[in-house]
Image (cartoon, rainbow over all chains, first blue to last red; front, side, top):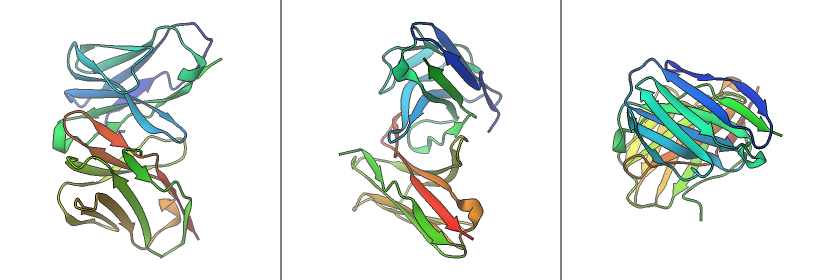
Length: 114
Length: 110
């Protein structure tokens, strides 16, 4: 998985609780991404980062926030989890953006919100 | 209309045959195109990137791009049961925006 780890790998939580997912990379890539994957929707971008403390929203960012205090770590927080946020979450990294934006994915976190 | 469309499948081919996976996209300014393979319960794995019209070959895989018709395809020659997976087409339209299709499930029968 290209030197990318995600934690936890599985989590079950209750509606209304905050949840933080962690992505850690050892590749020293500048760009990091959080996606969610749901049946029939493919991968959808939640947030991305283009450097330490530099982040921006993707297409499905409502209810999520991110932080990046170090190059290697990118955190995704669900402020108050809802059942619609039950999904598989993937972190990805890339060395470049634009045309040569080859992204490499972590192993994923399966989140269930009851 | 979805920005990146793929037939969900499943596409079933016998072992040793050629599997042909297709993808169409809507944004004419798309610059780069990627194919990912995803085994059940696993993460997507990049298998091919293509940036210009024509064919690009890598082992048993060939990616084909036709920007005028806005489609990209992936051919898998001599298909093996281990190729059974979901194949995701991804299109970068510039900057950070990479759009993924929902994927085509491929089943290779032994």
